[in-house]
Each structure stands twice: as C-alpha cells, then as structure tokens.
Image 1 (cartoon, rainbow, N blue to C red):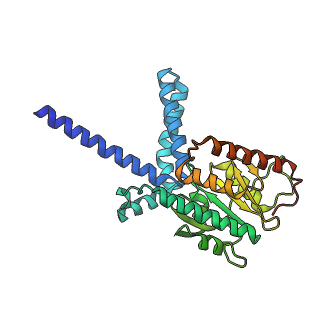
Image 2 (spheres, one colour; image 1 turned 135 degrees about the vertical axis):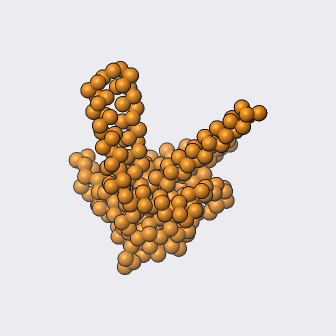
Image 3 (cartoon, one colour; image 1 turned 45 degrees about the horizontal axis):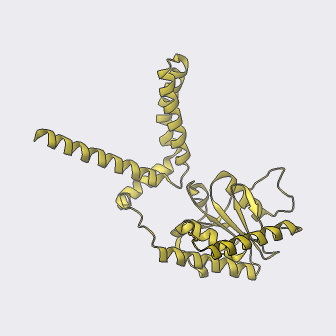
Length: 284
C-alpha cells in the first residue's frame, strides 16, 4: 500500500512539473528567449560531453559560462520574464489553446484569400507575415498590437491608402492578427535584384531569419508574390494562394481522385512556364 501511494505521488509530481515546463515553453514562443533556450541547451549538452570525455579546460570554461548566464538571463530578458509572470497572474498560464476546427480554418483561409484578391485587383500594396515555429515577438512588440480576429475587411482597411499602418507589415498566426505597422529586417544580399522594392526586400529579410510564410501585394504590378526561406515566387495565382493558406491552417489537403491530381499538375506546370517567361521589372 505504501508503495502504491509513493508511486501515485511520483506520477502526480512528474505530471505537474512536465505541465509547468510545457506551459513555460508555450509562453516563450514568439519571444527572443526561444533562441536563448536553444543556446543554453546546446551549452549544457556540450558541457556533459566535455565532462564525459574529461576535457578539463573546456569543462571549466562551460561551467563558468553557465554560471554567468544564470545572472545575465534575468537582466537581458527582463521584459519576457515579466510577461510570463503577468500571464501567470491572469490565469492564462493554465489554459491551453483550443484546437481549431476545420470549418474555422476554412473560414480564415477564405477571409485572407479574399483580402489578397481585393488588394491585388485594386493595386493596394500589402505585406502579410504568417508566423510559424520561429516566434516574431521582437518585431510585433515594437508595432501596434491588435490581437484581432482575422477578417477580410480588417486586412483591407489596414493596408488602405493613407491608413497609418499601411506602410508596415501585418503579423498573423493561426488564430489572430497579432500586430500591424511592423518594421521587418530588409534583405541585403548581392544576389537580390536591384529592381526589388523595400516591401519585397523586407519579405525576403523576414523569411531569411525565420520560417514565416510571407505574402506580398505589389501596388505597381497588381500581383501577389510569396517569400519562404529566403526565396521569392512572383505572380502567385489565386488557387495557389488558397492552397498555401489551407496547408498553413489545416495541413495539406489529400487528393485521392486521379483527375484532380492531373488537373493540379497541369495548373502548376502552366504557372511555372508563365513565371519563366515573365520578363520582370520594377517591383514595389
């Protein structure tokens, strides 16, 4: 009986600690602290390897480095730690994000695709950044926080001419429009065409430092482009936009009908040929 009580107590203890660690990691997502955690974990792993191999000098150096980080982390990441404590006080620490239904995801896809189609048709410049695994908190924290529901009307109004937020980027996740008027890092590499405007360079820049999916609407050419992993795809068609958004929100749709597979293949083949024949030009 005593053994059973001890076992039950240990299971509850491990479950509580695991949940706390999990919620701390969830709160860290979207902040600069995520990269710090990765770096500290690498140092710890390297420390154990050096200790196992009896590398005395390296072990001593890593030991002192980790000790110094224990004092530096609370100072450097004071805003992130304060945010975590605020979330704890509000009770959000214990809440899990609800799982999105397929209908909700489909509605979001339609709202965003409709907004991009409208902006493209009216040649209104726009920059939409969809956050994935790598947090973009350092760019949204200095912008205008919205935390608003994703709607077609709101996205169009943000980028409407003379709107104070229309020059910056909008950062979104699967649930909300996080912030508007965001300033992104501009890509500056010798292999980037000098004809690319600031909006496209910003899209390439954020896609180089994160795994974000970025849609750009050119106000001069009236076309939608896509930036992913430092690569730019121009003149994305409407059905491609919907496919990419569907993959982002609900995962890649499964096509079982051979006729549908053939139709999708021919569409992609036709679009790639058109992109290769496109002569390019000044892109804003």
